[in-house]
Image 1 (cartoon, rainbow, N blue to C red):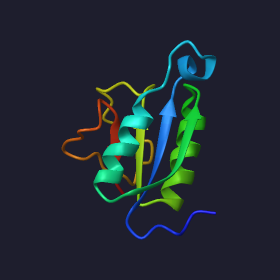
Image 2 (cartoon, rainbow, N blue to C red):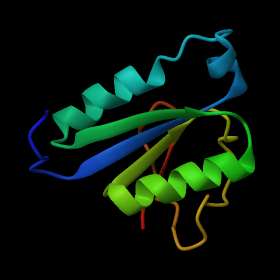
Image 3 (tube, helix red, strand yellow):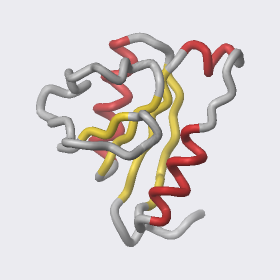
Amino acid sequence: MSPPPTGPTAGILIIGEEILSGKVEEENARHLVRELRDLGMSVRRIEVVPDDVAEIVAAVRNMSARYDHVFTSGGVDRRTTTSPCPRWQRPSRCSCNGGQSWRR
């Protein structure tokens, strides 16, 4: 069993049928875990969901209740300006390899 996190916690949500089908190899989570670790964050969960809005929203809400930060990658068009959770705001910039990060 791992020790409890001492810094901010994070969840990573990978979105896409292509990941679940095995057509595309997922690489963003590995990169993001390293970057977040360097920033002092503890990644507590990585989850993959299909391109289904209801499943995406449910996963984001679940993670947001458990972790300080939630990062998404794939499936969400980078031009999307609507947050998966109406109470969240999109940050002014994200350096996460084209992914999106939402804050409470």
